[in-house]
Image (cartoon, rainbow, N blue to C red):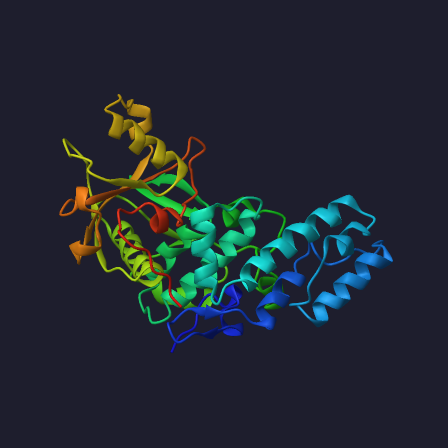
Length: 335
């Protein structure tokens, strides 16, 4: 069996009876290895002592008083954020349950980096049996920002951090530990080179064609189906569309902040200018396999999912919207 996304830390976790990921001490220690948390050479004794204690016991209760004695203000803030996130994970049986709770109650001060890593490892669990590299590459949109460009008439997305050459700082400590190259050539994934994805999956150096009518958007639809089934226990079918004309929006969900704005305008019957429509990346139709789970007022109606790029030509997907934005009568997390 081919492995992928080793940097997610999935191999440090066990599965619950319901298929979710159980929190482990080894996984929690990953956060202690983050460069923001590792005490610098000039760290005070209080910070060094706290770091050693939590590294030895990653479930150790940490009180505000333990953090306030740290001399450096930035270090105190980092510790507060990290311990709040750790405690949130520990309050839930699985990482999936922790994510669902955040999705419903708001991410608050949780650093986006932590949210992305949580989505990363959950998706690694969701797609464990996937053998199509294009589906895995499409799934990267869930937890990594993408840069959009036009190439030979095709709409291509590539990992923003990879093409930006951001100072070599790894997204997770495991990237550095595994010796994954900081820079690599970008290839557009296709049938000829797809098999190379397995060896380079943690480099995030393959681009994806999201041109309407091609395989990239269909692959993203498959990822969304699996995500919803795993987190909500609901089976849906999602199809990528080439256009949305004269369609009644009984229900819609934006897959990013820009798409939510577009959906709101369409819902209210407000005009949408050409510049905004040109930023639409994908339109999807979602149908529930079991209509009994749908709220009565839209039962039998399709849900439309919208994906857009921002004005800076980036896509920052919000997978939590697929948890909170659907018209379902009940929400079930994987236990």
